[in-house]
Image (cartoon, rainbow, N blue to C red; front, side):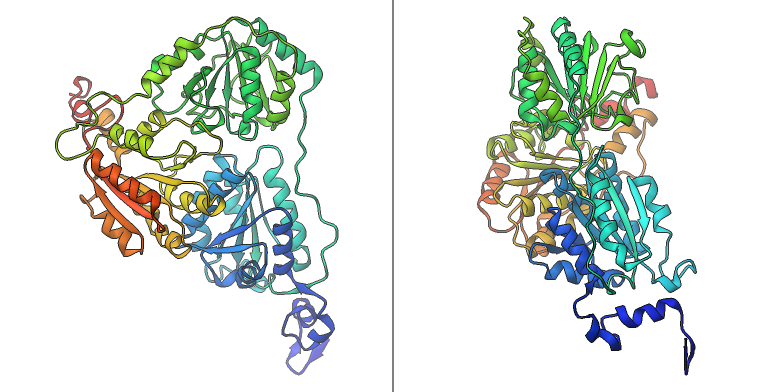
Length: 585
């Protein structure tokens, strides 16, 4: 087919009947745009928000989300914040959230939060606007091979090439994100596809993942093994987040002590007498003793990451098969036995498996975990002199103690990466489910965006972000997002003027520091006020208590700038002590 300007491509010919502004649009009024179909698929799957920095390569998607009665478009100040928000929402609700970014720079900025979702096993769908179809492969403006870029940090990454398949691919993305080990999926879409008119989507694959039960033979063998063991323990990970009641019932049925994996402290009530502690960074040796001495370790819903396993040291297996004291239940068969030998591995949903074990009429053996629980409690107690720390700077322990006194038990705590978090991990008791939002990837800048998402998803909950000055200066501008959306959340900043974790490593390994100082003390309360939030500074427990009291009754977000002592670099060490270590002289 030709016209006065010469031959037309197949794409141009198709556009005549699919573009919203085509001459033949009157014949296509019953057709909707591909973006509108995508919005319907997302809403039907329970998605409620899309976090983004708007970009020109997905104009119609942003518009369709904004116009959909069941969806909300959340405009953020940086794509990093958008990705962290989507990850946090999915973590607190269990339903995939959506993040969207434009090509090149936007996609690169989004990547840190997507990697966080991958390491945290968080279901998430990411839309990446791409250059238009006709320009693909020419290194067009801001073009990056997004499928190649995102493949290593997602469960699945794909580029859509047909507008009429975009709804189908979206449904598939939701299914992949929630099936097996959950995780993020990236869908790259050339910028000319979202606005095309398409036929109504055919029947789409369901997003509800299968939940395999524990087999009867596996159940009976595990029950016999747990009942016969002398010193059994359970290591519970993020896969038990939806199985809290069943986990407690199983632990009580078999009288088994429970450890929680790295930054999954809220999957088991910390005040329960069978709670043995958190397998995190710098886990105190006395807390580890019970798992080191265990003759049976049941790992449920945990991939036994480097941190949880204490550098792949625990739990110790003599080898695969009957010689191993370890059994593992995980919904993803690929995780079973991946880092340590197991005598029995079961690919099953944690909630169904734990419920099956707990329902058996097994008499609880007589085991006593009271001393092991008290050992953990002692590590969670602040030193007696923390509240009276000299020098006009607060001890980090005193900050956590102040938070414990002021905040409700069911407050949602979002925490950033940094050495300050070691005090939070030990000192805060997680008594309620879904109250901890923290990146197992160790990504800085998580806490403030995560708090925004948590308050949007659970507006009735008290939400508090705990962050260092380094993390705050990466994504603290999302306070503007909180102000604009009217979200009364609290940000507690542990300002010590350092990249504390790196400073500690440098001092311990090298005997000196490089590049870890942050200017200051910074007036972070004024920074918050400049973004429209409330701000206060605290240098003593009394000032912190007053500020927290104000924040809890405020109708705006509030940042509390707590000046902490950089000398107190961890619960066990001081900076002077590390720099002066005889091993480094």
